[in-house]
Image (cartoon, rainbow, N blue to C red; front, top):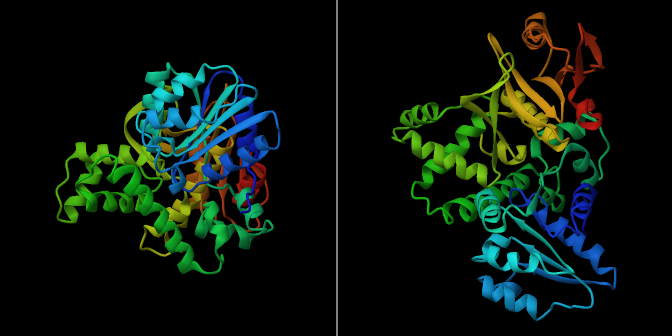
Length: 401
């Protein structure tokens, strides 16, 4: 089995070893957490001073490990006091009361723990409570554009970008022909269905399964739009189904906890405060998102572009919020430490009306932080319009700001 390395995650893991901290790789199913763990296993196993204890709860070889007692027995039978022990567990949330076991091993000398999981509520909530916060989360994303090129042996080009926009960045797509759209679509749908079934329907005993699937489609059709529980309930009434706002909010949280979608809060730029109502949602992977819409790609490409920009900003280490002005909206307020960047996403800047809409909102911001418009406009080069930089999507994905 070929393992394509994602060195940024290996580096982040290594940075937190030796601190009596449980390292948790989080993220949606099939974004590559297991392969990061296997790559780590390969690297650690090359040193004879390391003893690697590996468990993959999605494989039948380890199906008998069902609870913390089983886990303790398995580890105790393999631990080696003469070497550094690395306990690596894939999909740890499948082991009942795993936290009790990990808490015991975390403080032992010569023991390092790295686990993966696909449910934010289980991993963050339970670990923080039972371990006193002594864990470090590393969020693993689907492939960014540069990793997509590397995984598929492509060069940076308009054609490669178009393919990325169409099929997204699930690493498993490497097993398929990128020209076979039907196969790629089926794979993305299978990944979504597995995540919905294992991480939401079975875990939370969801009763209204049709609404859950309709909610995913609603969020896909409204990617990058401000959404409220009321707007979801109204959408469902149009489909002759009554859904309470409480149920809508609860199911959206389930989707967020499974990393299928990500909530982005609104930030009032002038008052510098968070607003409590109406958030935006972006998908973890645009390939999955694209399978849930009925319209052609050209009719909703601006939503896809905005989703891709959001994911790249997160990949680059920014905390992302939606900017609210007194009259208007900024797609992305991006914060990293004490620095801030504003960015607008656009499909094409083809006329003065579009230019005024995208650039005009940024011109209303009176501070001196950098401001950008990112678009798919052909042949665009980095230009400066009254301090606002216009970038092509390709340049942004390759070089950043």
